[in-house]
Amino acid sequence: MKRLTITKALFKTVANLLFPVGEACIHCARVENRKNDPNLGPYTKCLKLCQRCATHMKPIRAPICHQCGRQMDRNSHSICFDCRRIPNRYVEASRSAFQYEGVTKDLLTVYKFRGRESLARPLALVIEQVIHEHYRNVRFDGLLYVPIHPSRQYERGFNQAELIALEVSKRTKLPLFHALEKTSHTIKQSKLGRNERLHSLQDAIRLKESIATHLENKTLLLIDDIYTTGATGEVCAKSIRDVTGAKVYMATIAR
Ligand SMILES: [Zn+2]
Ligand SMILES: [Zn+2]
Image (tube, rainbow, N blue to C red; front, side, top):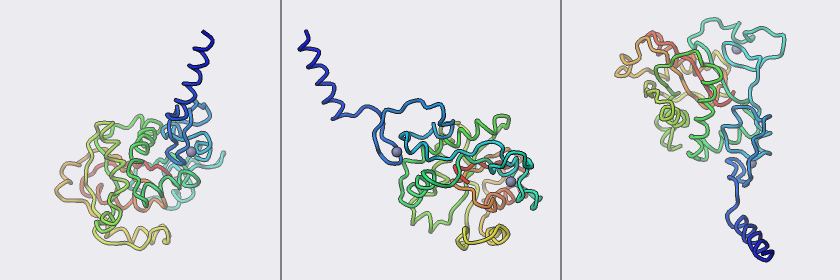
């Protein structure tokens, strides 16, 4: 009897070595039996990360700017300095899940520039969580994504925002509108200030005429991977609202 138990235990150990229990971390590939850590927060829980990588994610926590979703200090205004300075807003509100640093930055870089398309699915879960946390009372009629130039898409093989939006659409059953197109190249956005970005983008992003009639007076969610200065969202929302009267909200993975 005892011998059988030992054999069983030995078999279990060997089996565990050959077929480890638990799942591989989507960032470092370490296989770990994930515990349900209550400190992780809703966004981090969407991603299959090991304990160590999970603690290097920085979810955006309240209080946040009601307009752009930036994390704010306690006792500050409900609207951040940037949003107070530029009052003419086309995006109704923007919300992001994580600060763009650490493991979040690595994951988005690997996804976008090293073509790890399989990350689109877990990232879509994060966007769904953003909707759940912040837009519970908004009834969306459909989804949009920030376009990239066709030649960039050719280089990269895919549009990172489109792929995430597609996964969100599959899960939520909200229709995805391929409504926007990037018609010319713009200077690398991160090198420009907010106003410069607006001008450089204004002529570069266009609403497709064939889709415009489908968007009239709708409430839409614009999806992107990273929120930088908000200029991209503004230009997309402006081109849509001016023509269709649709309301545009925004959700990104990080900012
Ligand atoms: Zn890891
Ligand atoms: Zn703000």
